[in-house]
Amino acid sequence: MKEIELKGIKETVYYEKILNQMPLYIWKNEKVKGVFSALCVEYGSIHQEFKLEGKNKYTKVPSGIAHFIEHLNFYEPDGTTATDFYAKYGSEVNAFTTFNYTCYHVYSVKDVKSNVNHLLDFVLTPSFNKKMVNKEKNIIIEELSMDQDLPESNLYFTHYKNLFHKYKYSEQITGKKEDVENTTIEDIELVYDTFYHPKNMFFIVTGNVNPYEIAKITEENLKKKKLPAYKNPKIKKYREESSIVSAYTEIEGNVETPKVKISIKTPLSNFKNIDEIELRLMISLVVNSNFGPTSDLKEYLMEKDLMNYMSATRSFISDYLIITVNVETKYPKEVIKIIKDQFKKLEMTEENLRRKIHSSIATLVLKYDDIMSVNNNMQAEYLAFKTIIDNEREHLENINLTTINKVIKKLDSKNMAVTVLNPTTKEEKKQK
Image (cartoon, rainbow, N blue to C red; front, top):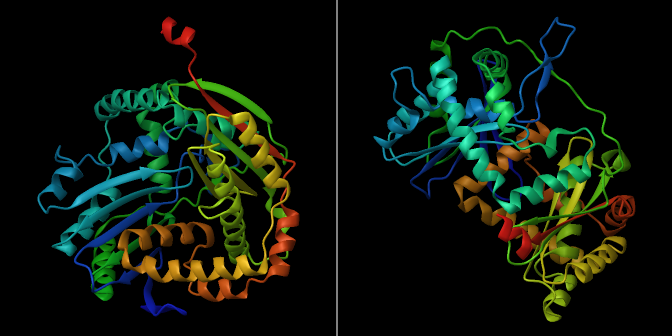
């Protein structure tokens, strides 16, 4: 087992590739009682077209199928559910599906061996049948209709439709009603058999554990399973245009105060000669400095009583960087203009850069008090780099003002999309 020293923060992560197939990362924390185990499959909602090794044609499956499988996987062969099993141990089990992957996770405080073994068992032991699939369709359609009633969800996906021409990020993770209705057990079995394989998965365990014991449990469990040969699927890649779809869109929903999303879309090809890890860190520093909790912009908007809430995020989506500012405001027209102007004059001073770097290093150290936060961060790192970052502090300390200003100049502030969620009009409320 390899020990990975996280430089500059005095932490160690243990790594082993189980049976030369599934990466296992373990972070031991003796200060806590609990253990957080996350078994992840690199299959998400955007992976709708793929071809198997040796095949020429792509197969297309219904949208939402990754989420459908997540639901079905909780059913056990004996008619019980994984939730029933974990309730006996006082453990918490859950799962989620994202655009890029599906993750099953358990939080436990006792009998780690049984908890880990059963996580591997229920995820890697399918028990699908037509009756179960048809029953689950009604549950998912009901969930889907509830999501569609959420105005913030409508704002999110409408905004992504304004950003992307071909990428599937504008489609709901659950799929549409017709997608769920058209999903067959054959679709379910094809996707499961193709992607639910240790070679397409990774396992991260954080908490009060013996790393060698976890590795042994995992290896012994996988050895007992009659796993088929990996089909080595190839996901279809879409060529996304660098332009946005729509610069400005207004929608309505059941909200008291208008909500606004403003994003700029920049091709990653603009940053060819910049270290990928440091690019992500620099973008975070720039976003935080210009739109974060202590930014001059936020203080100005609060002082003028122009907004109720503001946050900002940066996302690396396939070949693009998306920076988004989210605002709740009674004065969307005025606030949009101010934020647009800020995007056009993004800046970073030497003093602010040093302060943000020191703050980031302090946060990096402090987050190792929370086993779930560490686990989630390791998941994100693995998905981005197929490993975990062992020298983030070093990368932060390498960042200088000259490089960060070069990055700012490469950001495409002209390629901007704005989506506004307005309160439903009185007339429309009456019609409803």
